[in-house]
Length: 273
Length: 250
Image: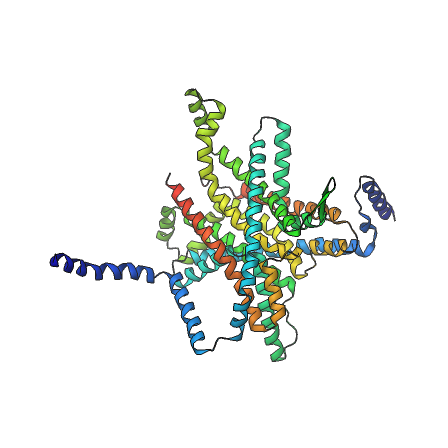
């Protein structure tokens, strides 16, 4: 018993520092610890720079703004993906006219600047919709969602078409020779492989649409960029203006970088297959 | 004179199908719109070489094998790729520009020579340069090791190796993604309107805030960007064909 305990105690000191050291070498952890240390020293000594005090007061508003951006991006990508899958499937249709129409849709909305599409949905759509006797408000952020859903759908259609066409036709033939029906081949053979191939480009698209939500501030949606501008104008201090705009960069980076890392990890894992 | 009557007829014909292009008949608004179209072309013509230069420099840093060059370049690439262009533009124009203006004023050096136009060119060039760098890095890494050994055995220095062997091959390898990036770049110049650079988008906003003709102007903007991106992709396809090397790439 005693022997075992001493063994365990002997083994532990060498194992723990190794794991600890590996974690300590993580640059993100070092940066977080350093930031925490700075904040604690400021708090303890009461020497927090005024710009940071203002930032601390504005941080909840900024995070609420970021939440608006995230909502817009999630809704836009959800709608865009649903429409894009239909458009992508139709662009493989055996009917020539359908293919041409779908290709035009994809070309137009992939080649239009996203900012112009956001202006398009914001100013061309009415500010309220009347159906029979009910009128619904049509707020600006919904229009931005639609403006971002248009390029999303065109890009998803391209990703979907590319994924389907990347499956070798030999697989269709092999499955046919095993007496699978056309829709069975699609559901059981092609689609599972497509989903795996589509995921990394789709995640890239999500990150890029999230970054495009910052354009919503230009059409008067109260998102994180708009909040930062209001904060900067309200506080009206040079150091706070610098701080708040770099906080914007940090907030977007903190949201988008993990997505980019995950995308790269997925791509690497699929390369081996 | 015949030119004007031709315009009047065109506007009349389009009014028949419900599109109000009356602003074309107003000389000052027409000139503003045409000026905006040229500003967009100028932005594209300046940012295309700018972004390619930035891309080559960043790719060279990232593949240099020296940690003090590759590390900062890598960090710059990650930050630029994962933050919105608009926020970068604000950081540059509202923050850096403000600081530079203050410093110049303190020194009594007068006004800052950096106009919003210059900032858009710089920020958009660097932003897309990052994407070029990623494509070029993949191209540089795809150069076969035997080719590099052969070049080294012929006495090429590291810089010659990059300029004469790696980059020419990498550009051919990366050309499809570079052209894609350039198409994106042309579209991205629309963000210039956010800091009041008079590009085609900004001039249109000025016109449609006077008249209620948003749809008509947006159609024109889309046509103009469509034409520019089409030209870029045509040029790209021509280059791909022109630079094709038998036995390399597909």
